[in-house]
Length: 112
Length: 256
Image 1 (spheres, rainbow over the protein chains, first blue to last red):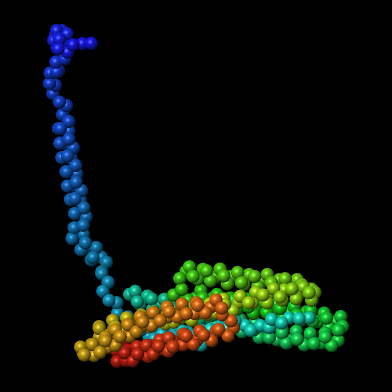
Image 2 (cartoon, each protein chain N blue to C red):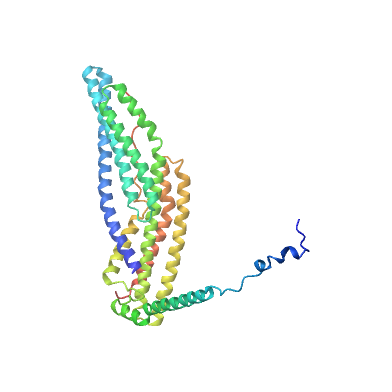
């Protein structure tokens, strides 16, 4: 057992137990700072690029090429005429008296 | 643009379906006539055999019975073919439902083709009688199936009519609002078109209820049940025709 009260036991090894002299810390904080700055700058550049791509000047150019359709398409004369014919035809087909095809009435009695 | 495309598609669709249906319908009618003639011939040959009882009359009876049974299979096959074509031509029916119907009716058509081949192979009275009885048994399931098919056709055609009028109603509204009419005239026409659109919506609800009513009947349907379809669908058809009339009146005075 070692008596920890006995200072003489440790006297020879004091130099060993002493804390090592403060070494200059590796530049970890410096690296982090650099990394943060790089990320911020990178993000800023990406934002600028996105903004440039979506800029109104570009949009206007696209709109100039492809004219936007009118909000409500007016049916043409021929289309309306076709629809009138179609309405009559489709309604005629919807007549339940006409659109039923009765199954054949066949004789079941077959005898020899 | 959307309504315009729907309108044009419906028109082209209905033209194609009408042409194909007319062909199928004519084939079915022709087969019905052939069957009736064949059955009359079979009855004559049967009477002749009963009175003569000769080998030759028996041979003739077998041949006439064979012909009659083949024509009976043909008439049913052409009937299911016609029903299948009509159902596949319904523009509002879902693809899943169409596939189900196609599968079911193809099964019946194939079964009838197999039955037909067996009749042609049978050379004796007993062989023909066995095949005749098989089809007799099968025919018991035919009325519910035919009723169900006709119910679908009746209600889907009503739905098709409603959509057609809805498209026209919408297009007319566009036309009215872009035309040189007085505000009062525009207001009157717009009010009429709004009421018509609402009535078309309500009519569609009624058709959906009709679906359920007809479905309930179909499981126990017999040949006499078919009268129920025009009885139940008739008032809805009248309403549809009336709404078409309203639209025609509303379109008067609108320059195209």
